[in-house]
Length: 562
Image (tube, rainbow, N blue to C red):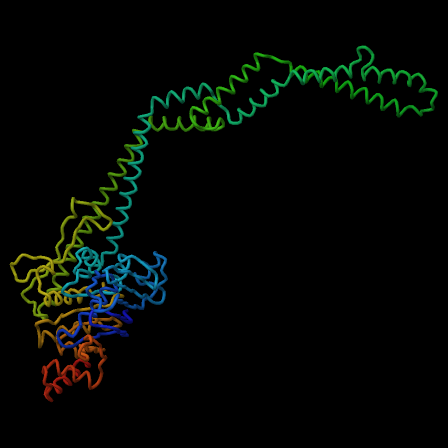
């Protein structure tokens, strides 16, 4: 719901703040008083084109703001939440125009693009005027309006799902073809590399093993010398080794052990154990010496293997330990080439099946839309006669999308068209109808499509142009019905029959100040006697008579009853 409008330095308005209530609000006033300025301000605040000419003379900038109260489920709340803007309580759209013609846009005091401001505005307000290219006049939204009128949600959901399947199968097929083409271009090279790697047969961790073994073998000469020295210290040869000395000590003690009354038993046991350990140490050293015997051929083999692995790793720009994985991946790529034809055939069949399924669903959606289009045309036709458009014909035109394109919404282009007279060629509303006729067409269409305006404030400009009497009364009745039940409609009107239906009444008037000062436009909220007087003025003109006042009373009473 539109809760308020704030205007600063816009054309003839220097400062204006208006609070707006639900229901039907009528704006009246003399021609040229500035009623259109309010609509210009609403347009600016919701993303319409800015122009420096709108800035009040002598001012540096103009500002137009519109405040809306919405709930968390409103489409605008979702749009703004995606942009990181909190709109849980209220949405304030603001536009600032500078003297150079440039403008800045804000939503809840956060700077945004004009495009986002316009997108939010389209979800919050719908303006029907002579120069409006949004709302029902925007052919880009006609398909969605027809679908809403016809209740095509289930068919649309099926179409969107089928379209997603087309996109997914097409992406999988394109990727498989790309992979296949790349693999085929590299097939000879890949087979050569795989053969080299299979001959090399790299193992993970092999580089570290070879490096350790090579390092050990290269230092074996020094190690061998030290081991031989240790063996010499233990050896019995020459009598100076540890084993010979231990054996000599044991023989001496054994000769006198019998005379020691057991006092040497512990020492003999320790010597025996030490002699055994010395023998074990000598055996282990001899084994180590045997393992470290320098074999130049064996060292050459280790180095050749290590260098071959590292050369392969450099060639393929991977670590040595990644060579086994590279070998496996190349084998998989070649397997893809070998089995690629069958896989591509399968993906092509899946994609073709998704296209066929989509076409069936889209055809059913088109048939449903054609039925709904006929129903919509009949419903709008019923609304045209009371609005003095009985000779006009409304058409919902369905045609194929350009190039028979498929889309998530189907294959149809939808446009609302009219023919001013039977037999005339139909065309877009804003090309065929005059300003007043176009507003009445929009009113008729909006009556039929009332549920699609949920959550939007509706604005009609000059909808009663060049009509009066029963037609004006019919217009007022429809505007009041659109505003009923919590709806909100603002209408600029010259018709007393329409003005009498308003739940709120604003009079826009131009004020001429003292000589040399600027003219301004003001808005006065009318009720009671002031409202009666304004409706009487609309009936009688410059001189308001008692008869005009009585007629105004009658209109207001009738409007209150309906």
